[in-house]
Length: 328
Ligand SMILES: Cc1cc2nc3c(=O)[nH]c(=O)nc-3n(C[C@H](O)[C@H](O)[C@H](O)COP(=O)(O)OP(=O)(O)OC[C@H]3O[C@@H](n4cnc5c(N)ncnc54)[C@H](O)[C@@H]3O)c2cc1C
Ligand code: SF4
Image 1 (cartoon, rainbow, N blue to C red):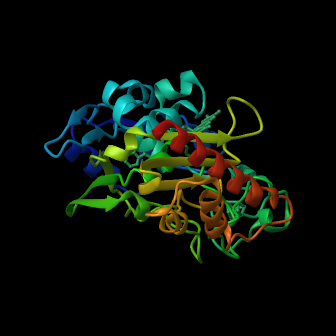
Image 2 (image 1 turned 135 degrees about the horizontal axis):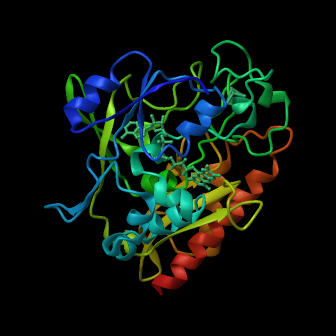
C-alpha cells in the first residue's frame, strides 16, 4: 500500500474542496476502498473521510425517506420504517457481506463499490480495461462464471456487486449529489453505467462529486416486496443472480410491479420488459414465466455462465409467485 494523507471532513464544503483535489477519494467505511489500495488497484494520495456527514434517516413531506450517505448499512436495514415500508431494501442489505462489514459500510460507499471481477483485482499480470484503459479484458476468454449476461460489451463483462443497489433500482430511488457547481439529483437507474467503450467509468458521477443522500419515494406497493439472492454459499458470497421485486395484485390482476436483477450486468438491471409484460395482466405462473422470458431474451452467455439465464428466469418466477401468494 502506498502512503496517503487521511483527512476527516467537518462539513460538506470541506469534503468537496478536499475531494476535488487530484488523487483524492472519499472514504466511507473503507471496506472496499482500503482493499483496493492494499492491492494497489487504487492509488489515491488523499482519503477524505465523509462518515461525519449526513448520517440520518428522515421522513420527508411526501411520505418518502431521505437517507444520509454516511448511514451505516446495518442502521438502514434495521430502521423500522425501512423494514415496514421497503422490506426489499432491508432484505437486500442483510443478504450482503457479513455483520461486521455491514456495521462499517456506508450507503454512499455501497453505491460506489467496485466490481469483484478477479482480473480487476489482479495487478500482477491480468489485462483489465477497467483498471488500465485499453489493456484488454482477460475475463472474456477466461473464467467468467460470475460475469454479465446482459448489457456487456467487447471491452468488459463485469457485474455490479451490490445487493442494496438492486433493491434501490427497483424502488425508483433518487441519488442526491453535490459538486463544486452545486447540487443535482440522479434517478437511481441512471447512476450506474453499462461498460460500452469506457468500462473505466462505473457511474455518471463527475470527479469530486459527493453522494449526500438517497431518497426513497413513497411507494405503497413496496410493502409487499422481497429480495432473493442465489449464491454459491449461504453467506459471505456475492450474487450469481438476485431478484428484487414489489408486486400489487387486485382481483387476480397485477396493478403495479417493480423488478430489478442483480449479478447479470455491469449495473443493477431494472427489468422494464418484464414489468411491461406483467402490468395489467393476470398474476399467474405462466405470466411470470412470460415476463422472465421477455427480460432474458437478449441475454448473451459467456463460456462459463450460460446457466445464469435459466437461473435468472426461475428465480424471478419464484419471487413473483411468493409475492402474489403474500398478496392473496
Ligand atoms: C469480504 C466482503 C464481502 C462482501 N460481500 C458483499 C455482498 O455480498 N453484497 C454486497 O452488496 N456487498 C458486499 N461487500 C461489499 C461491501 O458492501 C462494500 O465494501 C461496502 O458497501 C462499501 O461501503 P464503504 O462505506 O465501506 O465504502 P468505501 O470502501 O469507503 O468506499 C467505496 C467507494 O465509494 C466511494 N465513496 C464512499 N462514500 C462516498 C460518497 N459519500 N460519495 C461519493 N463516493 C463515495 C469511495 O471513494 C470508494 O470509491 C463485501 C465486502 C467484503 C470486504
Ligand atoms: S470484465 Fe471488466 S473488470 Fe473484469 S477483466 Fe474484463 S475489463 Fe476488467
